[in-house]
Length: 245
Image 1 (cartoon, rainbow, N blue to C red):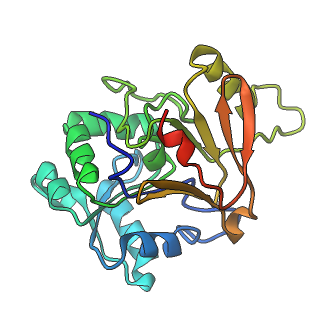
Image 2: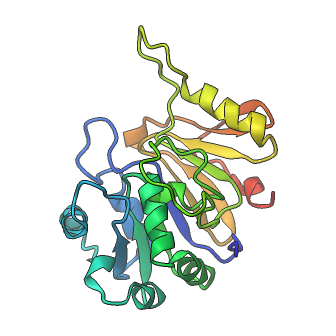
């Protein structure tokens, strides 16, 4: 199932850090505002080389000074019940392929979709934002594991590319991010891809999608890639047009 954007409350963050920031520093205020006093269920499945409990503890430590209460899904015997009863859901970064594989393995795709459809706030960063789109076909990650499908949570009707940058180091001869996204557009020209730079976010609330930049992102624009074209999105822009495609 896909989720109606009119019912979803989403905070899709590009990254957990920006520049030399502390861990989750660019995200704390936005998460606190988005989730309020709700206890947040954290899903650490994008972590590969860190035990899930350690990943949850790292997030808890970073958000505790702001009074944000976090509990990891790995501490529950029944992950379905944990999601169904969650006051808010938060999914961290790491490897997007591993994250989606784990969600399929635990049969949580439909459970999360149902929760979001019924008003449970969702927060993601990096891989956790990637999976909010139609598929993970525009992730930057290496496919270290093969999920049953590239189809993701489909909380929004477009693709995402967190950590967006088109920087090319001197002497580097690999493809730039724009070239890779150009390849996607050649295959799926009518599917929007929104690239969000580090320190920024897309927020969906009350049926309105906005692009939000912060001091951590130096007010950098986001970009939408569609039908062979690249269009800049200024901070504060209403992006709701991409919800109806």
